[in-house]
Length: 76
Ligand SMILES: [Zn+2]
Image (cartoon, rainbow, N blue to C red; front, side, top):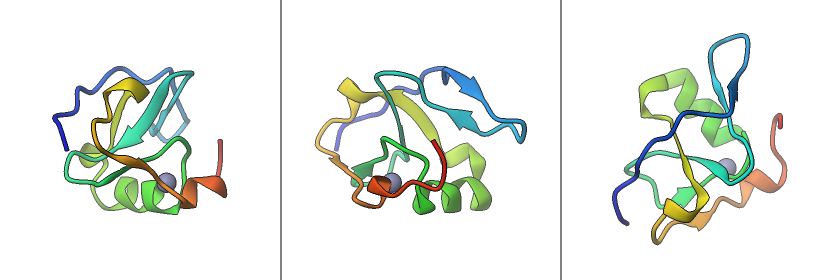
């Protein structure tokens, strides 16, 4: 799947969770998908182990596919 290089998120919410900016996506190093938005699975990763949740450049996702649940994100 290729190695992920975490970058600094564009901003953070009041709970400390990262918020992606243009060209950034959410991903976990073991995942087969990347997340353009804060969907249910991103929320679950954050709740279970915030350190697993990475923000990366969209160009650096390797063979990962866009997450389908991100079509109906929980929040922007
Ligand atoms: Zn998603």
